[in-house]
Structure formats: C-alpha cells, structure tokens
Amino acid sequence: MDQSRAASSASASNLGKRPRAVKEEETSDDEARGKRALLEPVPKLVKKEDVGNAPALASTASHGSEHPDPRLRSAAPTSVPPPKPQTPRVTYKKHPRHWKSDGSVYVVLGLSVYRLYRGRLVESSAWFNEVLKTTPSGPTPSASAKGKEPETGAGVVLWNAEANGTIMPTVKLDGVEGVNQRDWERLLDAMDDAISYVHREPPTHVLLSILRVSLALQFPHFLNWAKRTLSEAWSGELLATGGFSEKGLLRLEDAPDVVAVGRMCGLPGVVKRAMYELLKDQTFGQGAGGKSLSTEDIMRLVQLRSSMQRMWIQQTTTYPPDLLPCRVPLPPKPPGQQKSVHQGPVCIALHKHLAARDVHRKLVIESGIQDAFMCDFFNGMKELVNLPWASEGFCADCVGRLHARCGWSTTKPIWDQCTNLVGV
Image (cartoon, rainbow, N blue to C red):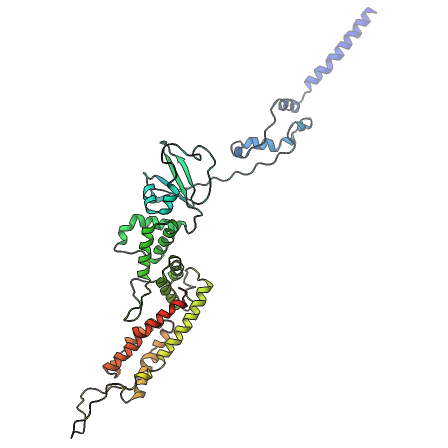
C-alpha cells in the first residue's frame, strides 16, 4: 500500500511538472516580444517641434494600435493624430555682386540675401533709418537671436549670431509695397555705379526701377536725380522750332510704365509726353510688350487722338485761304514804261491762287505727308515747315507766314489744351 501510494504520489508530481516544462518549451517568439513590449514605455504624442527630429517616434505612435499580439494592442494608444508636416526650410542664396565681406546688415528679398553696409543704408534711406534706429548694436542678442520664434512680415528686423559672436541685423523686404527684386537690385547697382551715370545716363527702364524703389524706401537723393533725368528724357516741353526736345531714344514699350510712374511721382510733363508717344501708335503701345494701360488712359487717348486728327486735317487739307493773295505786290510801273522794273520771279500766290493750291496738294497730300502724320500732329506741323515752299514759287514773305502758321503760335496753345485731355 505504501509503495503504491508513493508511486501515485510520484506520478502526480511528474504530471504537475510536465505541463510547466511543455509550456516553457512551447513559448513562441511572438509572446516573448509581447512581454518585452509591456516593459517599454508607451510612446508619447509627437509635438510640432519634434517633427523631423524623431521620425521613428512618429512612426511608432501612429501604428501602435496595430500590435501583432492581440493581447497587447490595448497597451498602445488607440488614436493618435498624425503629425503635421514640417515647414520646408527656405534656402537663401548670396547675391553674386551685392555681398560685402565686411558688411554689417543682411537684407533678404525673394530667395536672395544681400550683405550691405548698414551705415550707408541708414544715411541714404529714411525708411532704413526708421527700421534700424531702434535695434541693438552691441553684442547682446535680441530675443529672436536667443531662440525665440522671430516675427515675420515686411520690414521686420531679425538678428543672427555670426561665428565670431557678432550680432547682425537682417531686414526683410518681402511684402514692402512698391518693392520688387529687380528694382531693388537696380538701385543697388546705381549706388555702386553712380559715378558712371555722369556721362552716360541709364536707359528708361532702369530709371523707372530706381524711381519706384527710391520712392517706396525713401532714398531722396536717388529719387530726385531719377526724376530730373526722366523729365529730361521724356520732356513735355514743346520747342519753338516745332516738335519736342529729343535727348535720347524713347522706346514705345517703356511709355505705359512712364505714364504710371509719372503719375505716381507727380511729373505732369512726363505723363503728357508719354501719352503723346502712345497716341502715335495705332494700338496705343499695347502690343509693344510693355505694361498695359488702364481703361481710363485708353479712353483719354481715344479722345486726344480724335481731337488731334481733326486739327491736323484742318491744317493740311488745302492751302490756307487767309494767306492768299501774296501781300507783296509788284512795284508800280514807272511813267512812260510798259513793263514793271521788278526783275525777280513773281510769287505764285500773288495772282495764281489755283497754282498755289496745286503746289500745296503736291507737297502735302500727294507726297504722303498728311497720311504719315495723321497721329502725330506736332511733328507733322514741324515737317510742314521743312517743305520746299520757296523752290515751288512762293516768295520769302509767304514762306515766312506759312512757317508762323505751323509754328509756336499755333501749336503751343494746342499742346497746353492737351493737359486736361491726358488727365494731369
């Protein structure tokens, strides 16, 4: 009995041990990984500033609810919002020319950064003087340089710590009204090349750029110089000899911009001249590749052209009746002589009125002068003065009267009337 009880007890003991041995042998790799996962901390939610610094962390948090072991899925967060994408870092390029190795201020515009002289900008520009006058100039960095999120926007001054410990201001020009990268760089070119403009003035499109940005950023010296130079190039002064002062080649594609800048800068003479140059083109310069005109300016040009063409036709249709006949009659015959003592040719306008009109038709209409200057009244009047009236039989007195009729006394009042028609 005792032996059988001992055997039974041994069997029961062995039976109790076998399940544990089998369980240890059959423990799977998945269960082992699951147990280790229980010992690891639960991933925290990814903060905005951590995006990009810990991509693995973001991946674990977003897929934690799909744990391969169903018994351990509850240990992972069930709903984690996906992290917001990181704002791409903007890479600025040093400007190849306007980067002074010993410069003391950065200017950022577009994707370019310029290293310039702070003192020069402050002295030349009231705008930069206002922006930079309250910024620290010592070695103590501002809050943004210490890591505080910097402000954004036009004209905001940021601070950068250089490798040598110097704190450099950075002025952002993006968003400043009236400033673009092309105009800004042309102003910087003018600041560096000002001496070269003494004998060679820049073309109109460069002048316009300098005018716009000088007005926006308050560079008074360059603004006044550009105004004066543009006024000389696009002179609204009608010469006593006819036509306009021509100091340089005027490009039609520049005229719409000249109109806009002239109005902005208060240059009525420039606006009148640019509008007149547009008037001479059949499409008002809209197909020349320049800036488009406003609807108001196009309507003004239509009205001005109609008025100019009406006056031109009146001046060129026929020989002026009030100039007939010639005011220089032949001297009277001496007593007892059958012929006059006058030896020179007789003026064609003295008795042959039809002949005078025929000459006018030949020189003005049949030659194509009338059609050629249909949209250019003032230069057309100048061309009438240069026609060979004397060689066609008109005396000096009649030629002088024709010149006076086509000259200053007639054209000046008409040009003055154009002021209201062009809206200045």
